[in-house]
Image 1 (cartoon, rainbow, N blue to C red):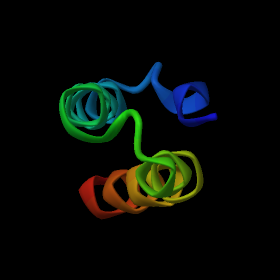
Image 2: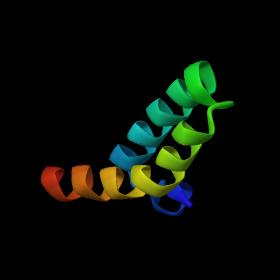
Image 3: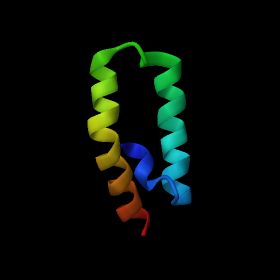
Length: 52
């Protein structure tokens, strides 16, 4: 879901950071997985809007 916007450089960078943190710390935690799936897209869009 969050990868649909990763063609934009800033979003790709943030997405990579989220992915690394997820893989490193909380990939097995369903709460964090739901937060990544549901909230990361909003976060990425918000950051993109702020950077525009």
